[in-house]
Length: 234
Image 1 (cartoon, rainbow, N blue to C red):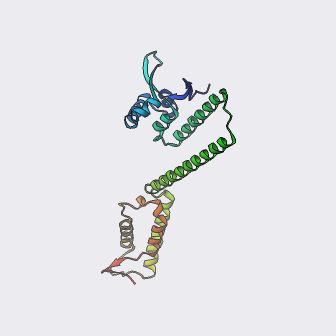
Image 2: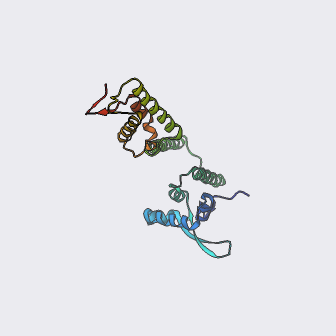
Image 3: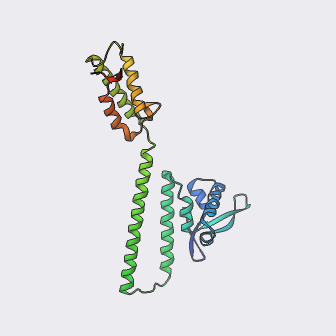
């Protein structure tokens, strides 16, 4: 039987810390810690409306503390749970909150709205949805920017870079585009090229170059010439 993610309590749709811990694969004590940390930040007014301290019996029939959470409180707590599996779990919770709210509303006799009220409600919903979409776009852009600043070269890019270095070194040597009195063998040219490349991208090893800089680094290699006596070779 599929676990019930949300439930109705005093006409409100809630979940609890035990369910969150089970569904996100976390220890309950850690979820309690996350909740109590956020409650310190959120303030008394928000906490009174959205968190309720409660208790449950564990597998050994011991009485243990837990929290009941509204959808707003749930969203606050799991905001930082961002693995792929956690995001899918959050979606399931959101869908269940929505389904349960719709169920409750369907049990109540709705008050008929006038055409004017219906139009105003529709306009308000459209404005809210547009604001939510704009906010999501900004969050996604920020997330992509953050990722670009952290992801380094993958294996295929590293291999392509090594091949480009080999090709450039042999081209310089075979076409006499280096002063062989200074660069006595290709090993010294390799050393100079790798050093200049790492210095250009401020890394201690070429695999630490960022993926976003890959194309630029390849162009750097293709146009590189060794420097000596203060100038490049002709």
